[in-house]
Structure formats: structure tokens, C-alpha cells
Length: 161
Ligand code: NI
Image (cartoon, rainbow, N blue to C red; front, side, top):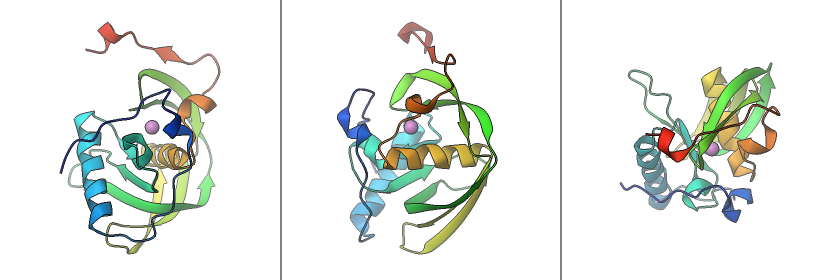
């Protein structure tokens, strides 16, 4: 496992559509494990493959809940969403920016896991927010495009320590 280089705001790759993973093999599993390491290193709750420069539909999410392994989500499809929540959000590709945004309160997705098995995830609250945020990345969308106007906070580098 390894830490991969993150792609940051201004990198054109973040605007690109990620491709469906056709075959879940060791290379994809290695990518997912590297993404988990990278997410943990930067204290993120989620990461999409495009953020490490790979245009494939692979997402990892970890809410750091006791006894729960990180989610590995491949080729996700949104089945339905319910309600909305207004939440504070950030992104590892925009390390100094935070803003309020509306996300679904509940989201249901189907996807594949790292073994190619079909999985269904029903997320509420923070999990719903994280899934919606990461699926946006797969579609070339970043949170900053849909924030609630006037809520953007830019943290100066010396304040992030
Ligand atoms: Ni993000």
C-alpha cells in the first residue's frame, strides 16, 4: 500500500468523467487500498480515484466509526435520495476551502465491492453527504460549484496547522 499524490483545485482532471470499471482485478484493489491510505493520511472521510489522477469509478469512504472498515465502492449508481440536509463541507482537493452545501439526507446506492460482489448501501446524514460528494467527483463535479452562496470560507495556510 502506498500514499498517492493528490490532485488539487485547478487540475483539469477534476472536471472529467470517470469511466466504469470493467474488470475488478488486483490493480483495482491496489488502487482502492492506496486510496484508503491516502485518505487516512490527510484525515479525509472520502476520496474518489480521480483525486489521485485515475479516471475510474472507484470511491473510498471512512467515517472512522468504531469497528467499521472503510467502504470501497466501485461503479456506484444512485437508486434514490430522500430529503435534504444543509451541511458544512470540504474536500481533500480543496484543502483550504470550506462551505455550506445542500446534500440529500438519505441516499441509496448500488455498486460493486473490491471482490466484484454487488452491494447496496443506504446512507443517512454524514454517510449520505460523503457518498453524494464522491459520486459528484466521478461525474467531474466538485463541491465548490454547488455551495450555498456567501458561505465560502478560505483558510489561510498559516491557520491550517
Ligand atoms: Ni472531494
